Amino acid sequence: MRPIGGISRRVAVWAPRARRVDVLIGSAPETTVRPMVPTDRPGWWELPTDALTHGTPYGLSVDGADPVADPRAVWLPDGVHALGHAYDHDRFEWTDAAWEGRPLAGSTVYELHVGTFTPEGTFDAAIDRLEHLVDLGADLVELMPVAAFDGRYGWGYDGVALWAVHEPYGGPDGLKRFVDACHARGLGVLLDVVHNHLGPSGNHLDRFGPYLTTSHQTPWGAAVNLDAPGSDGVREYLLGNAFSWLRDFHLDGLRLDAVHMLVDDRALPFLEELAVGVDRLAAELGRPLSVVAESDRNDPRAVRPGADGGLGLTASWADDLHHAIHAALTGERQGYYVDYGPVGTLAKALATPFVLDGTYSVFRGRSHGRPIDPARDPGHRFVVAAQTHDQVGNRAGGERLSHLVSPGLARVAAALVLTSPYTPMLFMGEEWGATAPWLFFTSFPDPDLGRVVTEGRRREFAAHGWPEHDVPDPQDPHTRDRSVLDWTELDREPHRSLLAWHRDLIALRRTEQELNDARLDRVGVCHDEAARWLVVARGGLRVAANLSDGGQAVPLDAPAEHVLLASAPVVVSPDGLVLPPESVAVVRVSG
Image 1 (cartoon, rainbow, N blue to C red):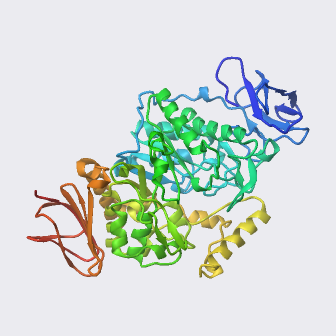
Image 2 (spheres, rainbow, N blue to C red; image 1 turned 90 degrees about the vertical axis):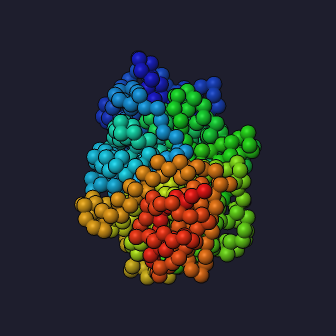
Image 3 (cartoon, one colour; image 1 turned 135 degrees about the vertical axis):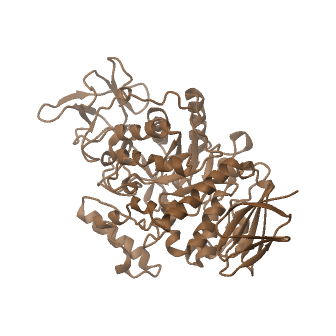
C-alpha cells in the first residue's frame, strides 16, 4: 500500500487465481475483516479505506487462508512471516531538495553491506562512517540488497518481501535517513536489487499469483515468471518495485543482480522495459538515474541505447578485469581463473572490458562473449573492481586480495582499477586492506533450513578441494561477526598507508582529465610477458606496472616529464622508468 496523502487510501493486490481476497486490519482480537472487490483490470482486487493510518497492522487473506503481508508492503516490523504495517511515504521529512543527482559516468563507486559495515549493522551506524567515504573520494555508495529476508543477518540475496526494507537494518525510515545523509554529503546511492529469484523462507507470493514458472529453471529452481501466462502482473510488480526505490526512497540508481538469470523470451525484454521506464522517471524527477546490470554474458548490447539495438541499461559489471588481475597477481588458476593469468590477458582487460569477447573459454568448454566496438562503447558503461562481495565472499575463507598478495601488489591492483577507462568500484574495507575476511553467513530461524544451508555450503566447497571442516558455518553468529570491519585499523600501519594510496589515486582520477576519458579507442596497452610488466597509455599519461619480484627497466614510448604518483621510489631514465619489484607509477610524458 502506498498512501498518497489526504483521506483517500487504497489497498490493491494482483491475485488472478483468487475467488476472494480479504483485508484484515488491526491486531487480534480487534481485527476488522474487509472484503476486497475485483477491478476492471484482470486479476486485480482493491479496497478503498481510510482505516489504514500510518503504523496500522494489516494483512491479506486469499480464499480464507491465514493472512500474510501485502506483497507491496514497505514496512515489516515483525519480520517476513508476520503482517505488515501501513506506511505513509509522505511522513518522512527529506532535506535533499537541492540534490541534483550523481551520474555513473565519471564516478567512483563504493560497495558496502549494511550488516557488516559497522558492528551495529544498521543504517544509522553506517551514517556515522560516511565522512570516511567523502574523505576517500567516493561518489556513489552501492548498498547490497536491503529487501526484507528471514533472519537478522545475511547477504541480502534471500529477500522475499521485495518492497520492504529489512527491519533489523532500520526499516524504511532508516534507509531514507541513510540516503538523505548521503545526499547531504554529496554522495549518490545505488541499491542492489534481486529480481531473479526469491529466498527459501518467508516467500508468500505463490498465494497471490504465478510469480514463478516452471517453464524455465535457474540454479534456485523455478524462474521468476517474465514471459509465461500471468507474466504481465509479475512484470508490473517488479517494475513498480524498481520505480518505488528510485522515487520514494530518493535512490540514484539500481544494480540488478544476475540479469542472465532473468529468463525472458518476450519480444520486449523486461530489462529494456525497465530501462525505458527509469529514463522516463529520471526526466520526471529532473535528476540522473542509473541501472547497472550484473551479467556474465559479456554482451555490450545490454548497455547500448535502444536506438542502437541495445537494452538501454546504464552500465554492466565487467568481471574480466577482476579475474585477470586476480589470476595474474595470485597465480590461482582454479575454476574460471583458468581462462586468465598471463600478463597479456591482463593487458587485454585494460583495453577492452571483455577478455572473453567471442573467444574460447576453457572453463565453459565453448566460445563466450561478444566484442565491443571501441568507437561506440565507452568505458564508463562497464563497472570494474579488484574485489567485490562475490569474489571475496564466495571463497571458502572469505579472503580479501590483500590477504593473498603482497602490499606492493595490492597497490598495483588498486592503481590498475582506479586509472582504468572504466567505472571503478571498491568493496568496503578494500581501501585500507581490512584484516576481516568477508564470509558467507545466514541466520535462518528454522534450524532445519539452517542445517541444509550449512551442509550445502560445505559440500559445495569440498567439491572444489576445501576440507569441509575448513568451511565456516554460515549459521554460526561468529561467522557474521568475523566479517565486520574493524574501524580502528585506519590509524595503524600498514592500513593507514594503503588508505592514503587509494585516496591519492581517486584524487588523481578526478584531477587528470585523461583518466576520465572513457573512449576505449584511445587506450593503448603494451606488455612484456617474460619480464611481467605492462604500460597503459591514457592520453599524455602512462601507467606503468611491474608485477615481478625483481626490479625492471620499463620502456616508454615518449620521455617521462614527471612522476605524478608512485607506489615506491621510481627512477626516470632516458628510455623509460626503472620500477622496483611489485610497484606501479603514473607519469606524464612529453609530446
